[in-house]
Length: 394
Image 1 (spheres, one colour):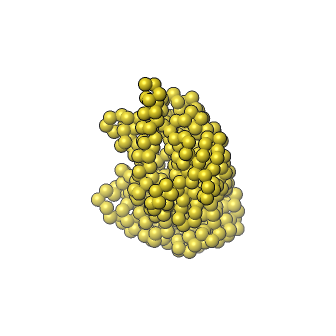
Image 2 (image 1 turned 180 degrees about the horizontal axis):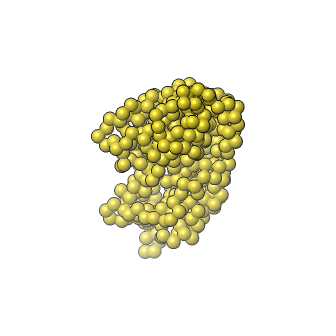
Image 3 (image 1 turned 135 degrees about the horizontal axis):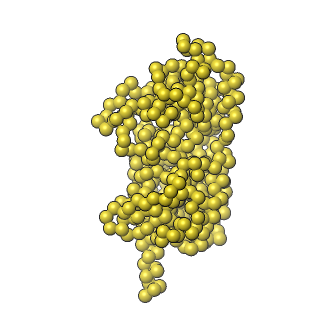
């Protein structure tokens, strides 16, 4: 991605790898950017989306037509920067209107060099991606592509060649690019009850906070942390976070997960962590046609029958049978959660060891909070494990 600072909104063009183009106005930084075109169905929470490391190397299309009305504040980011490669909106707010706002959305995009485009038919673009699938895309704006009067569009074929030269998301190993390089600790709120080792594969700030609120001291470790480094913190439980990229590339993390399962330490994974647990159990993973992204995805917890409205951001899924309990080297496992839109696996639970995972985001800072109970379920596993150890030592 190359970009300059924001200036008066000149012309811009979005080019998909199948050759379809959309012309609009520059939004955010001016220049060029590339990534995988995906769409998010959330009507709010755009600041959390932008700062979610799981969106690394993705160009996010907002399906809601009006974006930016609440501006940007300094309290809601999920990480230290914007991670999306590009941003696509239909009708950007002319000015932010919220008492917490500190900057406009386009100013924030420009601040981080994120090239965007506005004024295009995002409904048509979303329908195209639903029919054809997520694909590579480029956004181009500025003097390198347009004359001062907005004419002189660069050769479409040349831009298309640029887009097609970008690496695909399949086979992309990205967790190491977004993970912390140094371990850090998020202290428990109030009395410390447990210690958790959390592998940062693209963790969002609210995730360790949700655990800290439950009396957990969270040791956040780099994505390449070894089994020895995980257990050096004396964990009562191990957590694998969300993150970007293809889970088929996460061989190191799969090996760590298997070591955790061997030791019988309570395990909880979300999103990328769910896919890693699936691989550790012997299941495959595959790329979805256009993925699940947004804060309004219906998921059923099959263990209770309850339907939750949940926050998602994933383009890959676990290939596990929905209709039966499966035998694995670590005991029996069942699909505990399923998406009601398309029957995609949204959660796994072991029946003979204390381990489970979900494909979506229960921390959901921007809401909904239907799935917050999953952190309590993790605590329950650690409580049971602790009581079991005490009974054995008595």
